[in-house]
Length: 202
Image (cartoon, rainbow, N blue to C red):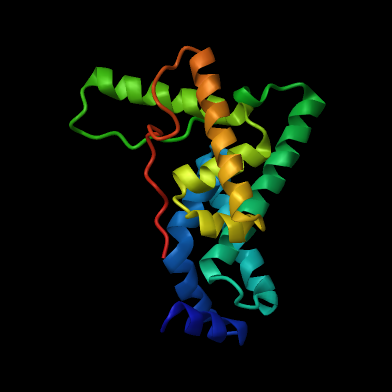
């Protein structure tokens, strides 16, 4: 069945059809949660929560966008709620955010030597730190475009913004990220050199 047919069946209570949708989308949903939170364990929990929310809210899905775009919105909302709650907890106990966050796993090629592997890991850590210092709206749009590979149109639909606003925010976010990296002595290009695979999407 097509995605549209699976969604229609799932809306009627077909759990098998919804399971097919989960299998088709679970990898990039997890990848998005991982990029936003920086924690594999949290990403797994939040992915499951996003799919549970999708199942509960299927009746409100009107099909104005693709199911995957709608699912991106749900996943991002779950992650951003989690990040806000984590920030409040950290502020309450006085724990710096950097001490709670785990380093994002970086795919390392077997062909790379020890020095190249170390350099790539250091770049990934620097980018993670730089992203964490950006305002939420800039970090979110950079993750959606540069790491998750959404088009401008998909981001526009997902965030409810016009195309011009998406492009201007992305430009400002890229410039802010570059300035942070330059300030901290990381002179590699950004964000195009982010050593992470783009999330796979249907």
